[in-house]
Image 1 (cartoon, each protein chain N blue to C red):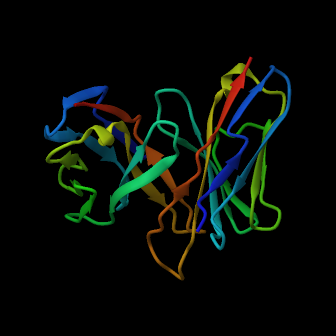
Image 2 (cartoon, chains in turn green, yellow; image 1 turned 120 degrees about the horizontal axis):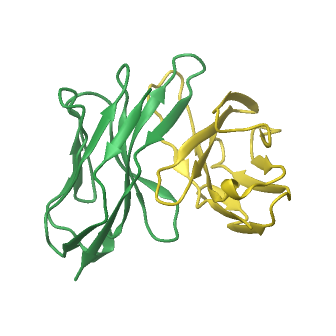
Length: 116
Length: 117
């Protein structure tokens, strides 16, 4: 079945460091890919998404490129801030043609802590 | 524009008791999803509604679990005879389909954290 594997955390960086969180997936067909972020005490928020191969999703300085050849969707940011401290989840959509259910399949999450 | 809301935010119960959670989606969102998130893991799909119809249930949803969305608006998730293994964060998400658009965005609520003693 479909699955997502994320880089294990926790990840601790200093402010202004470069960030990469690895994400690889296994899927049949052509899923869409997402990064969600969960700040302390809050719900999941969509950070960025990409719907087809070679698409680049970007938001708030974060970027990820849908790489079909390597089945990857790594999250990057050039200069992290303390406010980026959160748990990051990579996910894919399991699109079902019948009835259109688009359930998300998530990775286990990567906790990121940015120190000033 | 209010987001997805869930109630209660926290629930502590004793094993064997029944609990019910409520989810209010974003208005006019016709799709509603329930997920479960255990500590240190990503959310896992439980069930899905399109309007009032429950169209898919995960094998994670045992017979003790039931979900409804009676008028195609809010939804409830009930767990009967709770077990300690039910302790988790229960997340609700909603989305809106636009004709035959391929991709939708799911908006998540803050979750209900359940602890079964």
